[in-house]
Length: 422
Image (tube, rainbow, N blue to C red):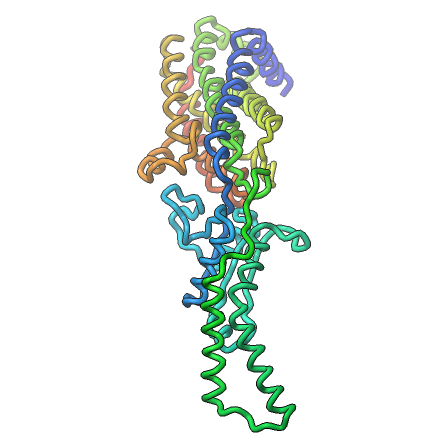
């Protein structure tokens, strides 16, 4: 184990002793992360803030539709999902239907500001002057109502006022007839009177302007995680420069082979597997260092990291292993350092934008999104988005981590089988 550690530390020392490597590892990635993060923040978060709210209408009545319209009117920032979803899939439904179970899970994980459920029988209860409850799910503090809950409360007071007016009038009639000893009203006459009163009150409320209108400010509360440009630029630029750094190992391995460095290692009391393993560890460590540098810059700039740091490290490690495996799979076919440099540029500058390192794949057409997943970068970015944008957990990124590790196993098998020390 000690000779392997010695090889790893010696290779890392050689790498960091070269000034050009430090520029590629530190200066350029940091500058691009800052510039792109700031630019994306201006583009995505510089406009009006929006609040993503799931809404399930189990009643499907005219009164429930009016409640929804009144809710929209309280706050222009509200995006009611799936009703108000746009072509860019701002609701992040990913083409799937939004049922109650999924909506509750989204609210629990903070993927939406809140979930509003209009129950079946809502309109019937109002028309009978009975209490009609609305289910509300949110991770916010109920003692400090957020803009969505405040808007909903204001709308319910307004929409339910007609039912309350008719209900109070009915109770008053009953009390008057009972208190004065008068005969009760004919049921048909009583119903017609109260229905007329209900319709008149409802019409007046429709004509009345909104009593309360909420405006969402520019503060962090209510802004989506994707509105922070560094939540995209740090993982994206990190993934791009992991490829530049790790794939650059093809040229180094070729140089060591030509300078007989690899052959001299064979004189040590180490197996071929141990020597190859030490080389793999070197480039894995360099890839993780590259990620750490860029993510530290993102952290300083206010980047969010989600709720599961071990899962975030798992996505990083799986992607670095995949790119390391790709490096060793291609290394036996490289004949010159110029050819190696060309491969690094070609692969990095094609796989990165294709996989969503420069911009989110959510904004590209469906066929490009599908094509983009030919790149390992897309699977890594999906994992980062699940964790950073959607506050997901380890279970949410298992598919992405699994695909990257499976690709790494296949590529390592190809690379190790074809690797030559001479």
